[in-house]
Amino acid sequence: MPKTIYVNLPVKDLAVATRFYEAIGCEKNEQFSDHQASSMVWSDTITFHLLSNDYFATFTPKKIADAHKTSEVLLALSRDSREEVDAIAEAAAAAGGKADIRERMDMGWLYNRTFEDPDGHVFEAVSVDMAAMPAEMKG
Image (cartoon, rainbow, N blue to C red; front, top):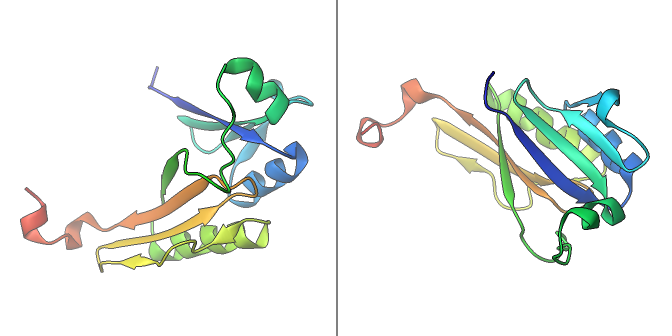
């Protein structure tokens, strides 16, 4: 079995968050979703579990961070091309998030845009052309 990652994220409005994650390319797994959680599959090995704030609080004794005010995590999602990076950033903005919360990074061989979901969780969409990477960076 491949190693997998399940990213649990607190959300204010489960329906809004679910629509956002569908818009950026996730598929909802109904088997692990209910009125408190949406299981949003990004790939065979990565799933975002969107948990209502009240439900999320049952898993931790710590205060839930307000991701609009503080950084709690930065999630990087690989894309196969610059066009896919642009497409996911634009989809994020159109679905209630914010695109380009910092300047785009374009190093020629590496292209990166950042976006936030409606709850302020920060994502980087990254495309890397390893063949074009400068020789001194290849080790």
